[in-house]
Length: 227
Figure 1 (cartoon, helix red, strand yellow):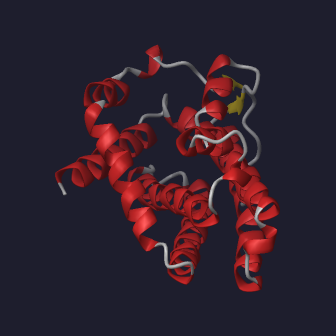
Figure 2 (tube, rainbow, N blue to C red; figure 1 turned 180 degrees about the horizontal axis):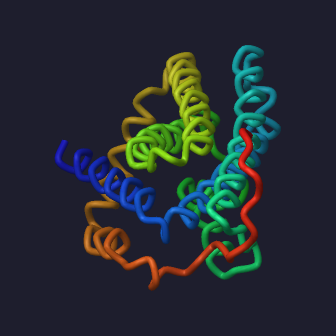
Figure 3 (cartoon, one colour; figure 1 turned 120 degrees about the vertical axis):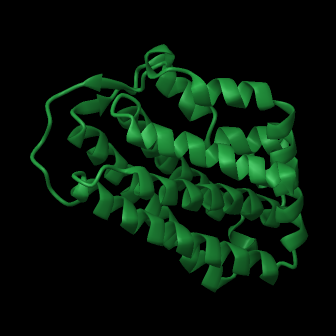
């Protein structure tokens, strides 16, 4: 319980501080854009690799999930632009970010060279944990986002609705496969690893914006428009 509370608490601090700080906010949005894009590719890979094991109802939900994540990446890219920046995909920070999320991260966690080698319920459990983190993160972002960023707020609120739906269908899928114990075990494992690296977590959260590698470069602010 203590580890879970710490995990949730540190996540809330990170998202809230990053959102409220105008220097860190563009970087946060850029990071989320990359995560959502990688999330789309990861779910698409799982869907293709495990097609024979996926019932029709789940396949339809996964197709929608893939489309949602593409839209989310576009939303956060637009949010970066409204802050007056653009995502620097050639930066070292971008390469590090891409290697730490999505399929690359999942392969390392499951210790496989290809996601096809991991059981489908285990892969779905990993995606569910990422979606749960997203729900908590987006709720924190919406609470900390300055009121005048109304266009960004409306767009992120729509992202949150999608993420909550993803959590529901993935939870249903794990019940369908009788694998709810898998996600519980993974959740405890991830929280335990964070607890073991508590010093690094605190250092990451408290590092000044100026000392962080940047995912963004200054660019011209576009006209405001809903995504």
